[in-house]
Image (cartoon, rainbow, N blue to C red):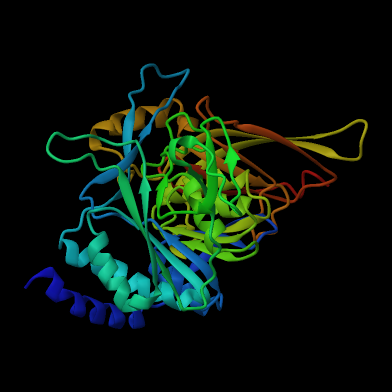
Length: 447
């Protein structure tokens, strides 16, 4: 049977699967600031059900943008570059971020997406929109499925994102664009047309009556409503917004979608959150946001990106079964009274990090001896992020300071002043996405 003939059964089976989904169990790993934005690590399907049942968010989301796997039949990862004063010549290692390989082929892939489209439709507000970001591998099949789920009349645009980066071939025209399918939940959808320059022929003034014309370094132009082909550069290797995530999309792309389909204060969501580009753009533009990704590396990438830049803050959720420690952190504390103040100074220093197991780390087996050597001789090289709550209430971890690994390493010591200290909470995440939580009781020492 052809794939086209299977599409009706894919939709029907997906409807049944959607009805059978149970809400996932999620716990607060960190609360950053006072904001109620959400960053989650877990399978997006039970997470969406969690939003519907536990957060009462059915019909509340104004925009959903997703950048799912493209059915590219490839594995994606990032380079792991470590520099140690104690270990010379650490090789560049590749760690896996996610795989886009489907054992049962396109049918399995389309089923995965269809179940999620049905859940997204339930989450969208009546004036809400869905943007699905794909490429030539599967976009034509997905368009047919979305026509069935959202209705052909609610298909608004096929937007072509054209870029310069990428490979070339002698056997076909160079593939230099992605396709974004833009659907509305209903005829009430919100849309604000954006403007762009349209240069006059030969860049000379037309001087038509009633037409405003402008001039720049190229010549004369008018302003017109934006077309459905967008020329936006990829995120360059030296770009300030570069996170190192394999399939990162540019913030300018997100900004254009948000400007067109949302207003300030609207709720935006990305359930294949990746490196957190939608979150970053939405936060900066005054939109509320939700981001979820099943990959632990993706989640920590987004967390590192947002922890220092988010204006209002957010809550970082993980699956409840991921809250157990996967490593051990050795910490030194030094508490000293201040002679010129009634406060005390607490100095906290990371001393050692130990992984519980090396079996499930996302690197090739040939690199395991290198990882073992690092664990033994310079274990703090594996720490990618750590944060500390100097007034931990044993319920909600709300860090006052956080530190991210940069190209030149990571800060391993910090200081804090207070009249007294009780419980100190420290959360550490390593380069492979493993989380460790450490609590220190200083109540007797500071009183």
